[in-house]
Length: 431
Ligand code: CMC
Image (cartoon, rainbow, N blue to C red; front, side):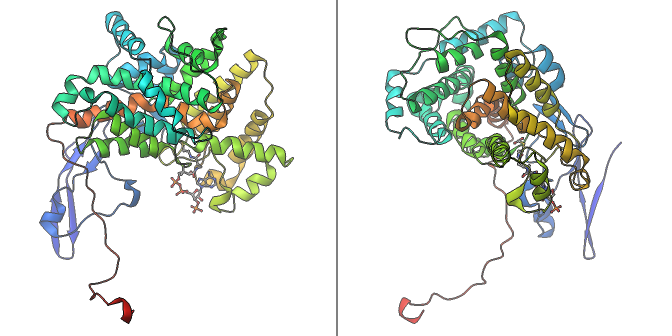
């Protein structure tokens, strides 16, 4: 069906084109509205604004649907793994055996950190926030590999395969090195023969004289965790990557900006806030009842962390998968985590409360991801770093769309100015 949109402002009408996506999503194209009418559109935080066309991820928040390149997240979680899903997200299709092997080889070859780069770590205090370290060390990749980071789309796209694999592989290695640096432990180099997640666990937990033996369910849980975070449409960090990339900034620089955006507690830092909340509830001897009452006050300082989502209004499909995986993992490892019991109680209580039902607030992916990470031995201050490893393929795919779009333009939103009207400068002595 053809759609038409007519906007009437005072006594004038403006016809606006309507764009329709492959899933039937509709958008009114108001790019020419200002030129035609002098009016802009206002959408604080871009909540109802399509900033781009994208063929990577489809998200239907009302119905809890998440698909990457057409594949439902539930199927990917069940049958795929992080590296294969990363390939799918970046290149648009599942790899055949030869492409998968080639991609895996690239990841293995680019895993190690140059000795010169290792020196960067020593410039940080041992207690530096890991996300601050990660963002700046990733930015430094542009300095270490300038031939992959020319700030020229055409040239950077020629070397894209190498830069993309390097980013995924090295962000994981840098994460493990941050963990070890903070503990005063010597760096453990990657091992070529290990699969992606096992290699990460090896770099985190091996001793120089004794290799870490990971239980298969540990690597599997990490794989699932990373896969579930691999992309999520135009969230805050991904939009940041696109915005920075739209100035023709290279991949590494754009990824570093994405990591900064992810570090905030309302985005990637929410998994930390969830664990802190559960721990406080536990320490105060509350079973969650008192906390739920406070969360219903509407006071932002008492939000039920891990609940609600800017886009999902029914359920977060990732939360369903991860909630179950969390329980399975703890059972298999024989771990009894009191925080999981509190989380389950909170979830059940909140889902019965009118306040949460009326506002369509449900657990999001972060509600259980922290409990899985605790079970994997990952300290709370590294949670968001793990999220960053997982989200890297999505950021890369989005950067590539921006770089490859011949019709693309620099991202440059407008604003509604509400400041002072013109006034004359006043000399200091007369103020
Ligand atoms: N606990 C209690 N009340 C809440 C919560 C919550 N977690 N989230 C929203 N509300 C209330 C809010 O007070 C408002 O009430 P009222 O209509 O009476 O003013 C109503 O629900 C709508 O809230 P909103 O702030 O308009 O919702 P939003 O879409 O702007 O915010 C959110 C989304 C994720 C920032 C918010 O739900 C939140 O702060 N959640 C906790 C933090 C969290 O878990 N973040 C992780 C998001 S998932 C990770 C990712 O994909 O990046």
